[in-house]
Image 1 (spheres, rainbow, N blue to C red):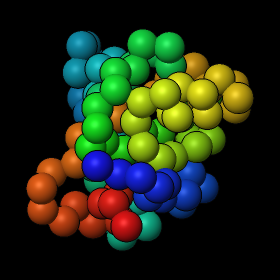
Image 2 (tube, rainbow, N blue to C red; image 1 turned 60 degrees about the vertical axis):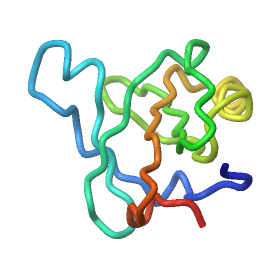
Image 3 (cartoon, rainbow, N blue to C red; image 1 turned 180 degrees about the horizontal axis):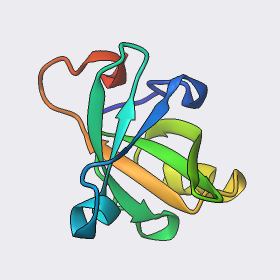
Length: 107
Protein backbone atom coordinates (compact mmCIF):
# COMPACT_ATOMS: atom_id res chain seq x y z
CA UNK A 1 0.00 0.00 0.00
CA UNK A 2 1.28 3.48 -0.85
CA UNK A 3 1.79 5.78 2.09
CA UNK A 4 3.27 8.86 0.46
CA UNK A 5 2.87 10.93 -2.65
CA UNK A 6 4.55 9.34 -5.64
CA UNK A 7 4.87 12.07 -8.25
CA UNK A 8 4.63 15.83 -8.53
CA UNK A 9 1.59 17.11 -10.42
CA UNK A 10 3.71 19.63 -12.34
CA UNK A 11 5.86 16.78 -13.77
CA UNK A 12 2.86 15.23 -15.54
CA UNK A 13 1.85 15.83 -19.13
CA UNK A 14 -1.65 15.12 -20.45
CA UNK A 15 -1.18 12.82 -23.45
CA UNK A 16 -4.84 12.89 -24.49
CA UNK A 17 -7.67 10.38 -24.47
CA UNK A 18 -7.10 6.67 -25.01
CA UNK A 19 -9.27 6.80 -28.14
CA UNK A 20 -10.28 9.60 -30.48
CA UNK A 21 -13.99 9.27 -29.70
CA UNK A 22 -16.67 7.34 -27.89
CA UNK A 23 -16.69 5.68 -24.51
CA UNK A 24 -12.94 5.02 -24.40
CA UNK A 25 -12.22 8.72 -24.96
CA UNK A 26 -14.41 9.74 -22.01
CA UNK A 27 -13.46 6.91 -19.66
CA UNK A 28 -9.67 6.66 -20.07
CA UNK A 29 -6.88 9.22 -20.29
CA UNK A 30 -3.19 8.93 -21.07
CA UNK A 31 -0.60 10.73 -18.94
CA UNK A 32 3.18 10.96 -19.35
CA UNK A 33 5.47 10.95 -16.34
CA UNK A 34 9.01 12.23 -16.16
CA UNK A 35 10.31 9.19 -18.08
CA UNK A 36 8.12 10.11 -21.09
CA UNK A 37 6.17 6.84 -21.11
CA UNK A 38 2.40 7.00 -21.58
CA UNK A 39 0.30 5.40 -18.88
CA UNK A 40 -3.45 4.74 -18.93
CA UNK A 41 -5.65 6.20 -16.18
CA UNK A 42 -9.37 5.68 -15.54
CA UNK A 43 -11.35 8.94 -15.30
CA UNK A 44 -13.84 9.56 -12.46
CA UNK A 45 -15.79 12.54 -11.24
CA UNK A 46 -13.86 13.80 -8.19
CA UNK A 47 -16.57 12.86 -5.71
CA UNK A 48 -17.04 9.37 -7.23
CA UNK A 49 -13.44 8.10 -7.35
CA UNK A 50 -13.11 4.71 -5.64
CA UNK A 51 -10.73 3.83 -2.81
CA UNK A 52 -8.19 1.53 -4.44
CA UNK A 53 -5.38 0.73 -2.00
CA UNK A 54 -2.58 0.44 -4.59
CA UNK A 55 -3.34 3.19 -7.07
CA UNK A 56 -1.92 6.53 -8.13
CA UNK A 57 -4.45 9.36 -8.27
CA UNK A 58 -4.21 12.61 -10.21
CA UNK A 59 -6.62 15.41 -9.24
CA UNK A 60 -7.44 17.20 -12.48
CA UNK A 61 -8.94 20.66 -12.95
CA UNK A 62 -10.63 21.49 -16.25
CA UNK A 63 -9.56 24.80 -17.80
CA UNK A 64 -11.59 25.11 -20.97
CA UNK A 65 -10.72 22.00 -22.96
CA UNK A 66 -7.40 21.49 -21.11
CA UNK A 67 -6.92 19.07 -18.23
CA UNK A 68 -4.49 20.44 -15.66
CA UNK A 69 -3.05 18.16 -12.96
CA UNK A 70 -3.20 19.96 -9.61
CA UNK A 71 -2.24 17.14 -7.24
CA UNK A 72 -0.92 13.58 -7.44
CA UNK A 73 -0.66 10.92 -4.77
CA UNK A 74 -2.47 7.92 -3.31
CA UNK A 75 -6.09 7.18 -4.22
CA UNK A 76 -8.92 7.41 -1.71
CA UNK A 77 -10.02 10.06 0.76
CA UNK A 78 -6.74 11.96 0.46
CA UNK A 79 -7.22 12.30 -3.32
CA UNK A 80 -10.84 13.45 -2.95
CA UNK A 81 -9.84 16.01 -0.30
CA UNK A 82 -7.02 17.31 -2.53
CA UNK A 83 -9.39 17.52 -5.50
CA UNK A 84 -11.88 19.58 -3.50
CA UNK A 85 -9.16 21.85 -2.07
CA UNK A 86 -7.66 22.49 -5.54
CA UNK A 87 -10.87 22.94 -7.54
CA UNK A 88 -10.45 19.68 -9.46
CA UNK A 89 -13.48 18.19 -11.17
CA UNK A 90 -11.91 14.80 -11.97
CA UNK A 91 -9.68 12.19 -10.38
CA UNK A 92 -7.70 9.96 -12.72
CA UNK A 93 -6.64 6.60 -11.29
CA UNK A 94 -3.99 4.10 -12.29
CA UNK A 95 -3.92 0.80 -10.44
CA UNK A 96 -0.27 -0.03 -9.96
CA UNK A 97 1.06 -3.31 -11.31
CA UNK A 98 3.17 -5.53 -9.11
CA UNK A 99 6.21 -4.78 -11.30
CA UNK A 100 8.01 -1.47 -11.83
CA UNK A 101 5.90 0.94 -13.84
CA UNK A 102 8.39 3.71 -14.51
CA UNK A 103 8.03 7.22 -13.18
CA UNK A 104 4.50 6.65 -11.88
CA UNK A 105 5.52 3.69 -9.71
CA UNK A 106 5.57 4.17 -5.93
CA UNK A 107 8.76 5.54 -4.43
